[in-house]
Amino acid sequence: MKKCIIVYESNHGTVEDCVAKLKNQLKYETEYVKASKFHDVSRLADFDLIIIGASIHAGSVQSKIKEFVTKNQNILIDSARMGLFLCTLSDKEEAEIYFEKNFSPEFLSKVECKGLFGGTVHYERYNWFIKFMMKKITKSSEDINKLHEEEITNFAQYFNK
Ligand SMILES: Cc1cc2nc3c(=O)[nH]c(=O)nc-3n(C[C@H](O)[C@H](O)[C@H](O)COP(=O)(O)O)c2cc1C
Image (cartoon, rainbow, N blue to C red; front, top):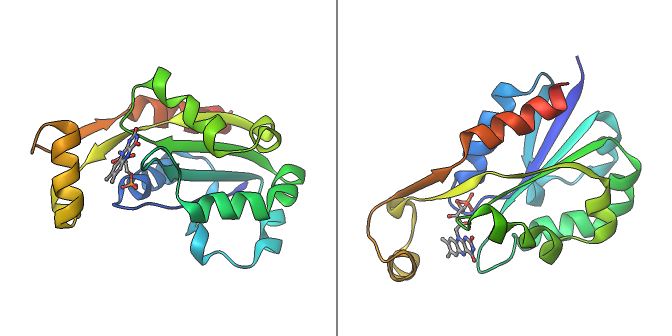
């Protein structure tokens, strides 16, 4: 069976949930690891598919993801097939810009499939400050689930072909 690794970061669990959904749908032997915990980058050569997953906070992906991609850009570009997905609450048209804003054109040109999986708000996962901020931004104290399950499935199916 082909092998896949998902390298990700997640502040409050949405990306992590998407990683689990992808793992279930990919026809690969799939492992996953946080970018901040992945040190043996020589292992990247062992995989047929590398997926990077991150989320948007104040317009940016996690610095650990930026660092991982920048540091290992040459290895990533020379290695396996590449996928990239983002979790964000923005609408799709608005969210497209986050790819160019956060990743280099060289890296993006190697990415075969880019996914925008949507986002969530789970108040019980936040500290008081983020709760306060998110209530202001969303003008609601209700949880939000804007996860695009069909995008996750399409993304997995793209690489399963
Ligand atoms: C403090 C904070 C800032 C955020 N800023 C943005 C933003 O600038 N643009 C956006 O589209 N979504 C923004 N979001 C929404 C997140 O991208 C969304 O909640 C996502 O599901 C987070 O995934 P994670 O919990 O795996 O990190 C923000 C969320 C929080 C909590």
